[in-house]
Image (cartoon, helix red, strand yellow):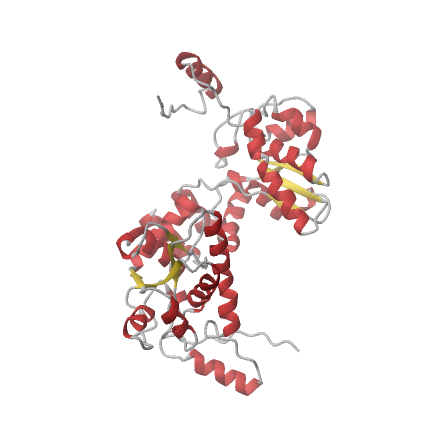
Length: 213
Length: 213
């Protein structure tokens, strides 16, 4: 039998890990976490395989690879794929200002938490802290984290509309924003930025175009 | 020496073919027309090669292929490519209502003109008539033309934003609009629609999202 239901919670006050664990226990379900899960990390790593393939086609063997980073699933997956396929490409996690738990964790050497989980337009990549599985991978393979402002993320969204003809949500635009507006923070002369995903609602997107396009 | 300048004209009253011919004569330049030019048609045909490749990967050997059509460069190029690589795929030109010179030309068997060249949001594909080179190709290879309203083009733009995460201009959305809103006008159960291009200014795009997303 297939059950399919969406359980909503308040991200400011609720604990989605606890809710997930409770539902799994009550209903005998298998919990699949959004990032701290080996198969999820492996799946996200296919983005790294694509980057390695495209970089090789272009003759790029050294570059910084900027990734929008929440709990680190995409970031650690891409880092593992590049370790195997393109070891000269170094991953740099990118986060919004005020929610830079991964950057701070990489700096301190232990898992740091965000003070708050609300109040950012980049909500898709706002997580409490890096995962128990993703953090050691990022620690071993990634360079220091980068941080961009919300304003920079909106400008990157508008530029992606105007120049790339793609729709990105604010959280999905932070790596592009870092590449565009923080060139001094990356090493070398080649930067690869991942734009992911595009779940911007139309009101927010109109606002970004109105103020930044 | 490289000259690069943009000469503006009024599309309601001016004749861009005459202006181009005059500039070429005065300055000794080579005129490259936007659609009635063998190399342009061949270049646009690479879109047809991609369609043939992707259709083969999916095991699709019969389908209707809807193309946004102005002067017929993209349409005839894709038709030639499919004739060679995927002859079971039939091209159908798609135009905005009131500017259906190609559909009428295919129906009457001779080159028909549009009454006017302004007043459509789909301005990128508003041309006076099919080209001398493109029309015979379309006549030989294409099925009847399809026509969509401006309203349908805007709805397709908004759906492309919401679902496909891509930016299309109104003229570039007419084939998607035909696929979505005129299913009875196509034969068989497989429809391929080309979305091209994305030069929507941000004001128009915001308006399309406000009214249709």
